[in-house]
Image 1 (cartoon, one colour):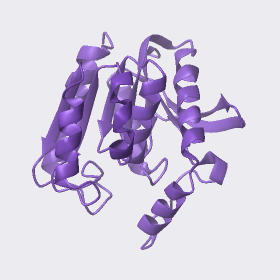
Image 2 (spheres, one colour; image 1 turned 90 degrees about the vertical axis):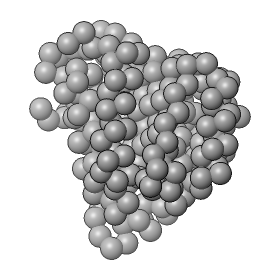
Image 3 (cartoon, one colour; image 1 turned 180 degrees about the horizontal axis):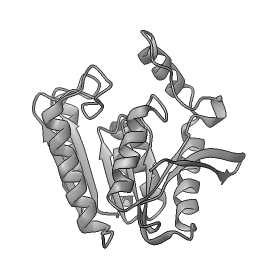
Amino acid sequence: MTSSQLSVATVDGTMPAHLWPPASGEGPGIVVFQEIFGISRYIQRRAQDLADLGYVVLAPEMYWRLGVSSIPDGPDAIEQAMGTAQRIDWDLAVSDGVASLEALRQRPEVTGGVGIVGFCFGGGLGFNVAALDSPDVLVSYYGSSLPELIDLAPAVTAPSLHHFGLADSYINRPTVERLQAILGQQPNVTFKTYDGADHAFDNPDFPLHHEAASELAWQRTVAFLGKQLPTGS
């Protein structure tokens, strides 16, 4: 099933977004927050994977103020992506994330609760949005800004699942262990680590992909979502 394009109202105008409906046409909602490469082919595949599980999936274009939907493939893709992410106004991005969650709640095909699944840049963004809003569930893959946002942990009351590789080049092992210790004190938090897995281990289009960690993390994600935000399918 293919996605359709729509707009999400924000404080500064309309943000482009993509919607993947489940085969049933209705179900609980999930906002997918992108990695630093934007609405990449990988993010689109994961959104479709979630729709195949029975969720109504919304993926907003978080780089919209910069006029960027996704970073094109190429030898300088990583440099372009990191440069683009660094130009983001974080507070505005969080505001846009909250607006996305509310827009999904209001859609007629969303018949249950709404959750968040975020990857890399989106993993931290989803955590910040969850601290300000009240999603029914949060799944965060190696949230790159989580170390700077950890003081928000008590405000994140949704059941949450966090995935981190223990060989992460961007978030070192002591930092991951510190995050685990702090988040582990919060109720309804599940923290999973993966030996030998680097950052972005779930992305098969990225050189750091770790197949075994990716498969296990996805199995855990599916089970966690099925428990906390069941589709009824």
